Image (cartoon, rainbow, N blue to C red; front, side, top):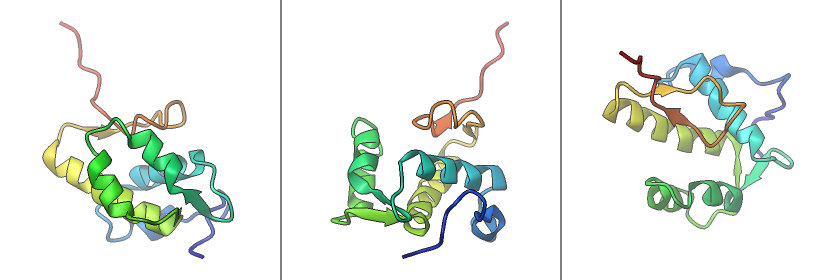
Length: 116
C-alpha cells in the first residue's frame, strides 16, 4: 500500500533524491498530503479534486488521477512533483510557500514584492 507516511518515519531525503526538488519542497508536498486526512496511508481523490476544481490545473489533475478513488503518498508525490517541476520551469520567479501549514491551498505563491 505504499510507504508509511507518518511524520516520525517520513524521510524527505528519499523523495528528494534525483527528484529535482528541494527538501523544503518535498516536505511541503508531504504537508499537503497530510492535510488531506489520509486513512490507512491513502487520500481520497475526491478531496483533492475539490481543492483543484476552480484552478487552471484541474483538467490536467483530473486526467492524471483518472478513475482512481485513492492515492498513496508515493502516487500523490509523483503527481505533485511533476506539477511543481513544470511550474518551476514555466515560472522561475515562483517560489514554494514556506507558510504551507497556514494555507495548504496556497501551493505556489509569488514572493512578496517590495514596495517602493
